[in-house]
Amino acid sequence: MAQAIRPLALVTGASTGIGLELAKQAAQHGYDLLIAADEPAIEAAATELRAMGVNVDAVQADLSTTEGVDRMLEALRGRDVEALLANAGRGLGKGFLDEDFDRARQVVDTNVTGTIYLIHRVGRAMRARNAGKILITGSIAGFMPGSFQAVYNGTKSFLNSFSFAIRDELKETNITVTCLMPGPTETEFFERADLMDTSVGQGKKDDAGMVARVGFEAMLKGEGDVVAGWKNKVQSAIANVLPAGVTAALHRGMAEPGSGKQ
Ligand SMILES: NC(=O)c1ccc[n+]([C@@H]2O[C@H](COP(=O)([O-])OP(=O)(O)OC[C@H]3O[C@@H](n4cnc5c(N)ncnc54)[C@H](OP(=O)(O)O)[C@@H]3O)[C@@H](O)[C@H]2O)c1
Image (cartoon, rainbow, N blue to C red; front, side):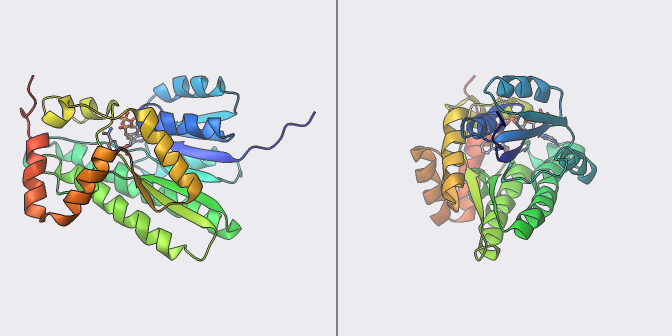
């Protein structure tokens, strides 16, 4: 019997954390997958996802570079992307002047440049077909100046804004753009960003599976944005009305090195 053709979802940063959970959501909803990340762990993720009964192609590529994004897109082999989940991202803690500049640049290149290049390429193909869903992983961090995470919060502020801007530009089309804005979530993010001695690094976090489910459902409904978790909803509503100087000071309390109890 001929196999039904499933729609294809492209998920970046799918080796761990929120991205792996988004890829599981896509598999559960009947999508085949193209997944990508920078390290070999993407192959283990592909094996796990194939066990869910869908076709999975995995690409190891540095998505902070246009070459890496191009290489990932070659793996499409002409297939249409029905759902683009632009999730790959990195954080970086410590005071800006104490950060290694190459790492800071990698945060900008991954979270902003690589992400918008990917959306530019896939988005044009979606526009030509007048169909497609885009989910961008922003963050509630984008609502506040991130003392001791200054570059990271700036990139997420960019993505939150960018997402709503292109959503509006595409409002006459059948393409939807949704911004998933998680709060602190249990993933490898904090360890990788050198934030384990901070209050936010040591604090209670949301489950990545819950965050991904909320984001995926919002994408399917074509909603503009979704903040995962009621506590984060309250926090982001407050951050939207407080002066930036006040939210920066609040962020210091969460992210200053040594602010953790242990
Ligand atoms: N955890 C949170 O509290 C939180 C809150 C709000 C928003 N977010 C956002 O959620 C997204 C996923 O983060 P996470 O929390 O799930 O952290 P994570 O477990 O560290 O996952 C990050 C993913 O992005 C990939 N990635 C990072 N840089 C890459 C690059 N240059 N090229 C290709 N892949 C790259 C990683 O793959 P490699 O290991 O191969 O590099 C990994 O698959 C990020 O955009 C993050 O900013 C996280």
